[in-house]
Image (cartoon, rainbow, N blue to C red; front, side):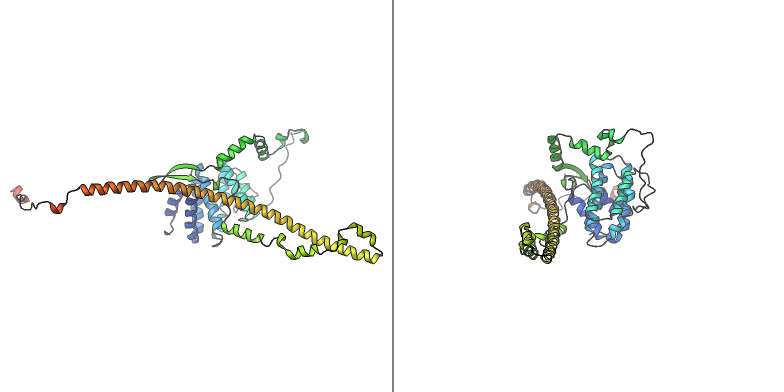
Length: 376
């Protein structure tokens, strides 16, 4: 890999486009130069503020890829990005963003929270910075942490209309109102919109003076980001030790005496001592079943989560395969053109005269005059 310098990094950022290979290639280069993490983040922040709105989301995706994939190497980028992200989100909140960009930068906060990339307090600071619309909040320090709980918004005194009499849309928050309106759209319209978002977008971009066709992958546009392979493998391995595979506990449950579950056995109690013994057995069985049911419920939630991870990972691989096939077809056409040019070149060479077979004309012409002969 090439040596790190700010000029090279800025050039690579200018060539960056919103495709997975482009983002992953630059991400690997940055992780390789992670000892320059502080300088990388400062240059990245300047570019996020400088570039056009349509490229801000691409730079945010680059940061996400670097932060998550560099965790195996060290915490340099996590520590470098944490104090700069509040300023970036404050800038994004003050910038008029299109719907896709706004949805993408907010979705990153949810991904970082789900995967514990940053603490909940830091993510709350990022979100508050975005919602402040460019105005620094007194409740938030520069590193994105709360100094104190944000003050509660007081209801205006002049508003005397009872809350229960207001229409539901008026009482709802803007985000809730937007979701409510989205749910009222016809299902067919939402389905078409979802299909359009899943279609790869083919776009012609100029890279280093050459026009190239890139497929804008949908792996960055769905509601969930694809997991890392290591994360998916670990989740699948954890399922092997789940509650449903605990043979010892299942054997204990199957070996419980019938008295703990059959109320008809209560009629056989003859004294208080046997009643206390039965109560102890029932209590132990209840604790065992309660714990096992809780583990089973957790396993069900985990299986649903792993199922979503598999769906996201499968979709991302399909998108990458589609792009690879598109690129392969493009280079096949280029190879065919190269073959045609080579055949034409061979034909042209064969039609050229053989210089070795031409007659020797040395000495047939008089020598050229010298400079002295010309000016004497």
